[in-house]
Amino acid sequence: MSVDQDTNQRNDDGYLSMHTGWFASGWPSYLPQHQSMTLCMLFGTASVRELRGDLDDILQQVFKGEPGAFFGRNGETLDSPVVWFDEDELADVENDEEKNQLRADSAAHQSKCEHLYRAAGLPVPTTIRELADTMLAAGIATLHDGAWTMPEDIPGPEDVLPLPDEDRARIAGMRRVWENGHVEQAPIDYLEDDLNRPDELFTSVDRLAKATEASEDDIRHALGRLLREGEARIERGTDREQAVLEDLQDHERFHLVLDWQHFNENRITIRRG
Image (cartoon, rainbow, N blue to C red; front, side):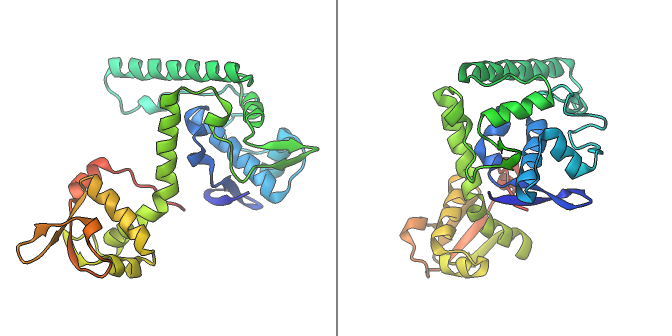
């Protein structure tokens, strides 16, 4: 199993472990988001440390009986109800109509997911403990003879639930973002952190590759995303005419002109810890 160590959640024995494929799996969109993430972290920690026992046992071993705010709120236990919508999310919403709409949207989403569970033969959870059973039934983790494991590749919702085509397409698009995130992020980190967001840069594909320790193909992929999203353009020549990336050799120099305002307004950036 591939895991990351979560530096924000720590106990006496060290860091908790999170499966690196959790967010890209698509499950956060089909389970109570925050509680399913903490359970995934608990499963991952039990797997990595080779802890044995049922859910109560590993919770005791990890937190010595004091989970604190692990499940999102102080005092919550495995038998606390699942939470599909956190009322704290309404703190900055001033319009009552918008608040009611957010609640209605959340209720509709919960109903949809519960219908999908029933159709797939999964238990519909009402408590955090039952949510763990749902996740185990979906193959996200396995408990066998007291031993916890998680698969290298978590089965996605599309492998378990009878999802409509539009949901499957959305998951595939989201997963491409996660899978390519590190490729696309390398030149962005270089432009932001090393060069302090220049308005433009006179460079080439091979120079960017060397500066970011990425391959030329990866740099072309990342530049292609910037160009398609309207966050940058390529110019060449004395008269600074717009050029096409595919027409340039790796060594050919060009002016990379950045539109940081457009980038800030439209880009969601993924950073891996």
